[in-house]
Length: 328
Image (tube, rainbow, N blue to C red; front, side):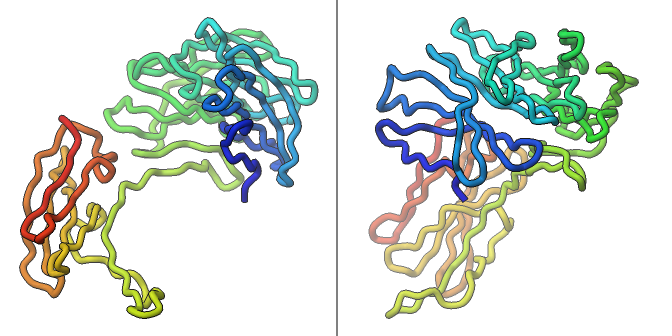
């Protein structure tokens, strides 16, 4: 269900960085003017809306600066934000609720506002955050009582996405310190590390969300593509039955299907599970028969983007195929 209803036309806006309130009744988000139609209008707003879609202004920032809502205090009395300043510096701070006053906490070394990960402890005393310099991020903690920040997790690896446990005694985070991404934990007392981090489980392609009553919520990117056929009634054009997967190996690695103009052949791309993967053009008769495979050179690009970077087409007389692939 839509909470905001922008159409991105002249005089409309963009909405981003939504964050639930502790009681689950409101959402804070950043509202941006549509610069395509209003290139001189650069006032961004931090707004709070209920589930009924009625919003109110919490904080307004002018002159090309940005503000990004990161987390609520558990008592609902403030929203932790990152503010991008005109001099290209970044500040961690708090916007009070109600009132909308900005209280600066500490500077954040950052290359872009969207790269900072922030989470507030259950008692509201500590704010864990990462900087975004290069590929080797570290985890810091800002102590709201002492008004000071300190380095909590310092390692040559990339450490990011800190999340406090519900009792505030541990901090979990993602790290590639053993060569692969995994979920790590660290005991914390008085805002300081107790002992060394410990690995909880491997967590490739996982992004952490929030702790819930049932555990740590996350979402995982599944790299899955396959080709299906769907029967359609010749007269009514209605769907008949369920989609059927086209048998091809390896499953979950097939994309961009194409019928030949004469309808006798069917072709698609497939990629192996190797690292780096091998791209193959698979050609099969539509009435069944021998399947032919033709390997395709692959450039050094991200394997997750492969289905979106190749295009396959038949020649008009069905005698051959041509394709487009990205530059190496």
